[in-house]
Every structure is written in structure tokens, then in C-alpha cells.
Image (cartoon, rainbow, N blue to C red):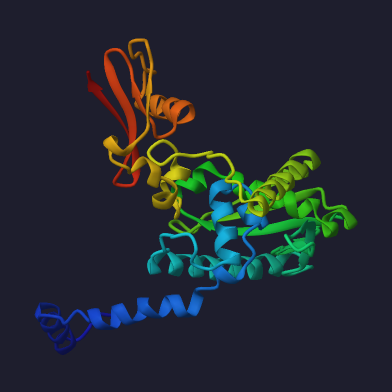
Length: 313
């Protein structure tokens, strides 16, 4: 049934009219995101979901957790915070859909997977909340976790950090008491509404290594010793996305004349790729200016990325 001519004319006129874009309302909506959802600072940084996060970032997170604002950190854009919240809503919906067919238990169960001892000798329990567990129509309890992701990570799933998170949960007191040796990662493609379910097996050695990695970072924090760099901006995507990269790379932002130098009595013969050359220089010489027979070489931090600088002598 077609719309009557009066309605069609009215709609056509509205489309032709100049519309007022309410930027003020848009800005107010985004301004509300932070006060509503800025809860990150209240969580202890060493969590199952951050098990594979850069050790440097975890170290800086710990410093800011105990002494807020000490280390400058690039804030998450409000748009990204909103994406996270929609992701949480999608994951809640997936659990509801899952529960329509399968039994669900241990929803948001708080589980303990280790302990730390702080500077004052107090014990810190390492805990996290699982999404839910289910027997999925069988006799064995399976850990379940829902994730909302985009097209590219959906194709590449499972994500390494998600596997690490599940390993730690299965390694927890709850996981071992309930003999949970399998986990299902339920991925929802937010672009296509497709679903992918991937099952992974418990690996006790991997889980213990992940736990020891978190403990190592905490020991570094207690002693005030920076853990080694694992990623570099301009070389690794993890380095590019670090909210602390400007602070961590400040030694490479210093002008050439202000840096220490090192003489190298050979001609420069760097690796084939610039990224390899950057990694090699940082590992060997840090922010020093290397004075070869024929070239002067150093690494600079420019516009959020490390860049190799080579000058003829």
C-alpha cells in the first residue's frame, strides 16, 4: 500500500529543507560518557584480561594505581569508551541467547587465581570474574566467555589475549576445584552479526607462565625497576596503541646534540628493513647517537613512532 500524496509531499519537503545539526547535543552525549563509565582506575591492573599486555604498560598502570596521575597517560577517546560499553551489552545479550538453549551456571563468579605480597607485606588476592559456565548439553563443566569484535579480528579469531584470559580462569581455584579443562570463546561480529565459537583446552604450563609474568611485573614495581621493553611504536602495533608511548619514548625525542654518543670503528651496514634496524639500534645503543666511520645513526621519536635517522659523515 502506497503512502497518500499529502504524506509523500510533506516528506519530500522535509528532505529538501536545511536541517540543523545539533552538535551541542552530540558533544553533551560524549561528555557524559566519561563520568558514567570511567571505572578503569578503580581496578587492580594485573587482571586475566591484561595478561598479555605490555609489561611496561602494566608497570606504569601499577604506578598510577597506587599514585594516581604520576605517569602521563593518553586518555581513551569517549567514542572508544562507548564502543566498549556497547560491547558489554552485546556480550550480556549473547549470554541470554545462550541460556535459552543451554543451562548456565556460575554467572559472573568471582574466582581467585593467585596471590601477591605488597611492599608492606600485605597479601593481595588476584581475582577476576568469569562470564559464565555451562555443561553445553554434556556432563562436563565448560567455561564460557562472549566477545564482541569487528570484521578483521573475527576472521583471525581466537585472539591471543582471550586465550590467555581463559587459561588463567581455568587455572584458578574455581577452575581446578570444578575440573574445568575446556573453555568456549563465543565471538560476535558486530559488523555482520555472525557468531564464531572456538573451544580451547586447558594448558597448565601456559597458565602458570602467564601468572608468573604478572608476578614478575609486580616485583618490578616493588623494586622500582622498569621491566624490559617488549614493543616499540612504529615497529609493533602493541607499541603504537600504548597509552604511555609518549612518556616511555621521551628519551628518543631528545635533540641529537643533547644525546650521548658512541664511536663505532666500522662502516655502517644496517639490517635490510628499517624496522629491524630500529630494533637492533635500540637493543644495542638505546637513544645514543652511533658514530660509524661513514655514517651517523640514531633513532628518533617523531609523531608517535620511532624513526631511523641516518646521516652521511
